[in-house]
Length: 110
Length: 115
Image 1 (cartoon, rainbow over the protein chains, first blue to last red):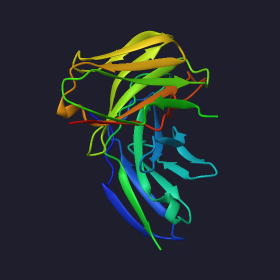
Image 2: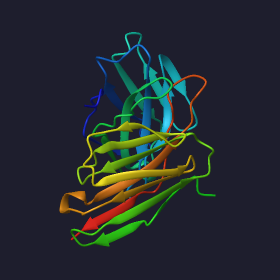
Image 3: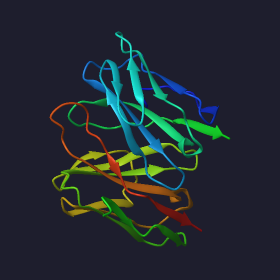
Image 4: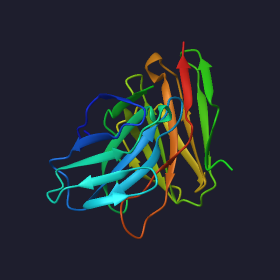
């Protein structure tokens, strides 16, 4: 079973900021929160990973509160090309199984 | 340069046939995986190999047999195909990190349709 829970779908408009929240109440001490993005007819692609507090890269930001029971992926100013499925995973450090949940299907409209 | 390449991209076959999907990675990674994605978009891990050694073998029918001739290749052979085997199969690879969890690089997928 996936260790994470996230909304099945979200809608947004171009130029908006999108925040996708993921719950992982039973996250293990050595798990890292990792997000993947999957476009139709493609394999998932790594977006961002963090352990606690905030991580930012050129694509997104990841906010993880101190208790680590949830996390939020933030996509600034989305465009139509951000329409995809976003997967949140709690990944064990240094290997182990990566278990994907159902993901959040984000639809960005003009 | 394609990092993780799978062939074929599309495969349509009859029930009962045997088929193979090939995967190659040029990233120098030491671990490779096979995932199955069904029509509901769930991605389920099937197998994982580390340096040609099987390390993860989920509850998969033994009609599915992975083979890793070297650490850059992980092929998937499926015997006696069934309708329920229709799915998209993704190959992935990863490298052990100094810190953090492994990051997977996925191939583009191989869509298998069993008629």
